[in-house]
Image (cartoon, rainbow, N blue to C red; front, side, top):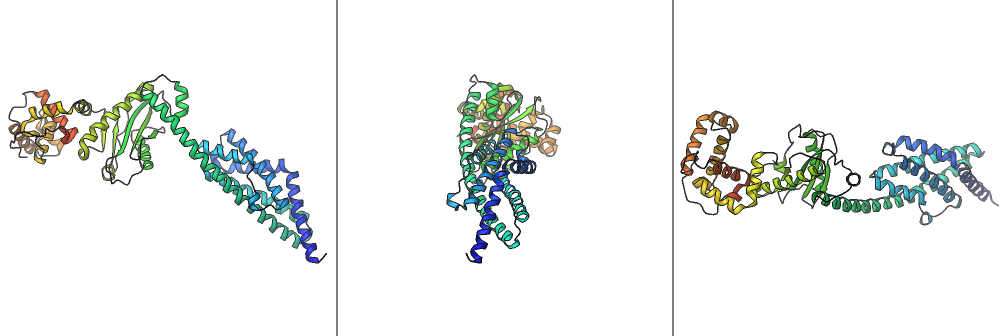
Length: 429
């Protein structure tokens, strides 16, 4: 045997001996690695089931590494152990990031390799053999980690997609039952939704009103979270995508019967995003009713098109009235035409007069209060009210209720509330 052959033989023997030593110390080494990983990966802390699966994954990976090193297996022959596969699947089901999965492999490799190199250095008297054996051991373990981490990541992603699809199907079925007022197990529904039904809620509809909007569903979800915080909620809202441009949401209010803040609309109008809010409701029935209210508010905003506000809240009395008027648009248009006369024209000047008159009536005919609300001089308000009365063709006290309803319809439903043909009156603003 040449000196080179002898060197190679001693190096191979040292590598094998280290693998055997790893197998012989499997329990203690696994425990040591578990202590390091469980303490370093915060996403795993507090979940005893996941931690026990981590322990099993560590032990099975170490045992497999020892076999791969002992027999110098090729990458194509390396298979992730079953415990490691199940651990990856369970992380995906719990929504724990793949970063936590891969970090465990990196930290585990670092610790196991340090242990192995220490054994080689302590037990091999020839420094050159020790150095070469360490390089060999390192190369094999890197090969193992590369192959196995890729396998478990693929398994993780596949399981995550499958689990999310299944969860979304279950959630959609439960939401449908809740909205249809079907009898169900509240506890089981809460577990499936990840949302507490036995509290107060605000139903929300979010949608992209602008076809050219660059917003995506994740943007709508982030907006729902921001909206929840602005309304004083401290809980996690429930988000349910309906299509590529529409989502439903529920904001938890806990014991509160109403929201405590003002909606944070930000730059919604510029982004082409609209929000409809239901009135707060309690329990499963309040969950349902607030959602239905939000849908009615959405319908009001949809009819108004680009004239809709960024947020349309069903808790507003005028929005509730507009929602009723929107049910029968043909009758509403007749009401508007008959009641407003020349004020029902589809012009900017007529719209200004209608809006000023609507606010004027809501303030009990106060010129000063109206001026403050619409940010105009009191004389300008009086001028516009006079022009509105002239365009209408009759006084404000005549058919007062019809007049207020017609103005509300025009304010919240936009041109959808205007008759197709109206008499041509002078509606100068």
